[in-house]
Amino acid sequence: MKIKNGKLTINAVLQTMRPGSRYTAARLAEKIGAPLSSVRQLLATDVALARLDSNSTRRGREYSIAGTCRAPDAHVDTRVRPDFTSHLTGYAGWLGSVQALAMTTRGAR
Image (cartoon, rainbow, N blue to C red; front, side, top):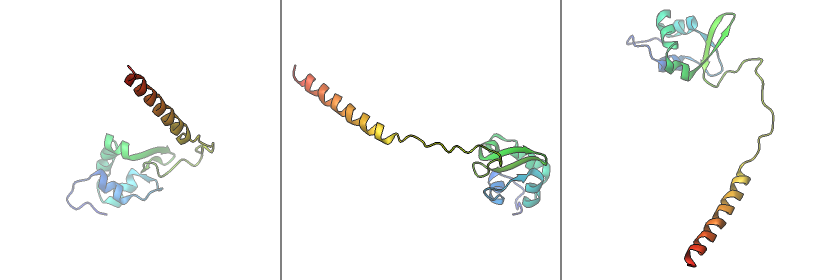
């Protein structure tokens, strides 16, 4: 995708990227057809930092769409997560009984 009106935006960069792939600034500049310095300036903004993940490798800094590409040696958490719905259901029932008791106590005056 080439930049038509000369305005480089983070949305234009995101449209050229595929989820799960990593891109260097030079590769993104080549795909978009924008100057490398402009792409580097855009990638350094707060908006880009929020929507992209960056990783330093031997080839330099690489960028990917946030949450789609993990490090090859990253730890995968395989623990079983607790189910809080049953606890919250019990708490809601207890809270309802306390509320009913409070209303009967209030009405008994």
